Length: 548
Image (cartoon, rainbow, N blue to C red; front, side, top):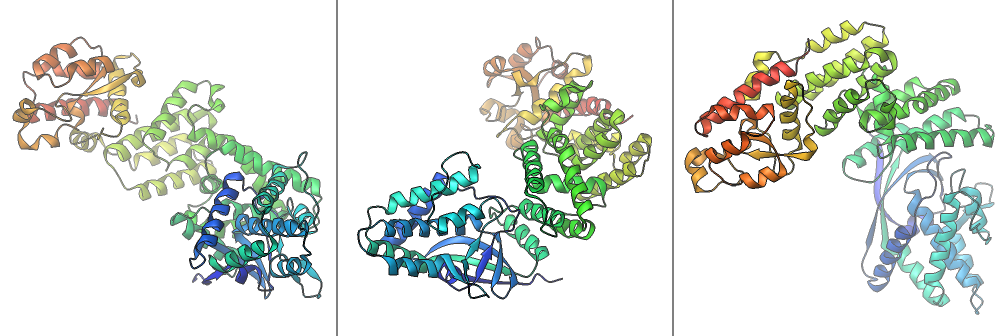
């Protein structure tokens, strides 16, 4: 199906002064702009005033048509609400002036704040969400907004009005009129008019891919809550609890996005979908109040689990008997930025809690062989993990999970061959190289805390003439090889510097790390010995990281 939309550039006057009405969906996020946003907007306005022949671009507005005169604000409510508050602050300043400004006030009201509805009764041009609209309407009618004791969003609206009143306070009615005239014509938006929620979601995803600061989680929330309140007769206290539950989910998942969590949960229990198809699938399956309520409860119950899977240090794991093992394995996925198995971990913890650490370990081994060393195709891996999620939901055994994982498991010979040629760039960070060397060193049974260590490049990253002579013109092919690296303290690393191999060998002789032992077997250090040493590391790696 084609994405049907109409896009055009419009001024603030064309948007707010066209006799149309706009409303923020009942459950969309509250007004949240703060001082820094108001100050930036005022800076933009001052620029326009100083350069009246210039246009200033204010970004996208995404609007969904509900009838010929009505539009749902999918994205842009913060900007449109703030501009409306700016106009209301201007009106208040005009009312307090010594000169009778009734006519100018009336023009501002009719041009930006109110217009006639179908019943020929004046209504507000913008209707805000359930938490903001009452107080916005109070401001429209000239009443003071509460300074304390209310929700943060209400206090912010009052502070925005106060801020704009202060910047306009010393200006005459004529100056205020000129300011609004200029900004209403010279502030431009790209308005995207869409036909339905599904297309709105697609627009969200398209704009997000291009860097626009939108939240498709808001759209998902609005859909779920609108189903629960489909008859618009849900008591306020019930709606308040729903809002609190959604906010609690946000607190649990922290810096992670609602949409990413919802996608993870969905793919843990359904055939895999990509983010662009998520909303469509949710709409097709969740249609009744009971379904929406149950779905929201599921999201709330498991949000801490999702957050903990992305945060190895989470308190969530500390009450688990295998806390340290889980923490170490999750640190691996975080370090190497491997996110494909999160849905599998999610459902494995819920449905196979007793075998969770075992499955986590198997996937870690597979990921190290497949992602880190072999650099296999992640799409194939995602499909595999999703098929295992569906197996777990169908009640298949843990041994079935293991057999399925082995289907993508690089065997020892392939793994060792790829490991032998592996480079591990360390210019930005040597954490990944340190991790691999530390784990290989632990095969003697002694734990290694790589956080206190660093990586020594036997052939230095920036070699002197002596080292270049040993390796020839192709030295850059070898200084980032794992076979060229040793695990050392930061103090020893400074001492080793550009010294010749014989001196480095003597100093490294006293290190206790198993991974360094091979260095004593060589009489010289060149491309052949780097390759030889990396082959030995490959054998160690194949023995350590295996599913058996």
